[in-house]
Image (cartoon, rainbow, N blue to C red):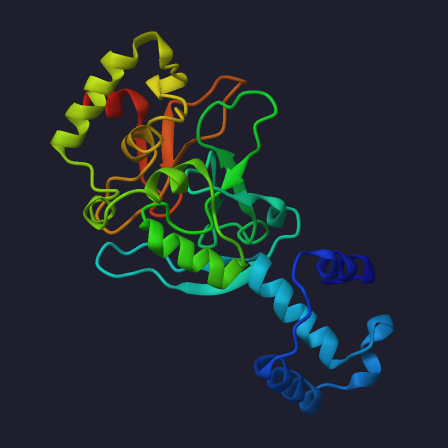
Length: 259
């Protein structure tokens, strides 16, 4: 934050003040190393420290280490992007976030880019997933409750809430039998299935998982990323999909040919 107006924007983000042991400790540390006379119109108080911690918890985006297929990724830093923080969560998102922290640019490598995954009807809310989409129902609900303070009731969660443990255990694993079932479902639904560019099926409330996992999840081992088209060129939509985790590029026509 470089100005009072930017700082006020930060304070306007969601996150209620709650004084706990963590905020008391952090406030004491800051007080011991900072000059309190240079903090401007906002002053410095335990309540402000608590408020900033709350804003950070609910609104910060994790900037990840580079993808490595042989190990789990970890967060290298967190950043708050006030406008991007207004995106709500959905467990079957219609958009995903890209960051290019390791790009060569000195001026834009801290930017984040949000791209829609597929065509959307007018007035449809654009939503992100706050974590990898291949998490199980119980894991998603726990993280959302602990980290963001709400219970998700999106279409996917409403379906999975009635699943048995065995069904949930196999979630996200697309094998040949699953793909055959998806092809049968295509035949059964016939004209009811609309497709976007690259033959990508739009959302269907009765069958929310199959298309998403086949079309929009990266197939690389240990990735779990989401695919979205590259930006349009000369107002023409791209048929190249980019993974927001590993950066792998795939052609829609090749994807269709492999099914």
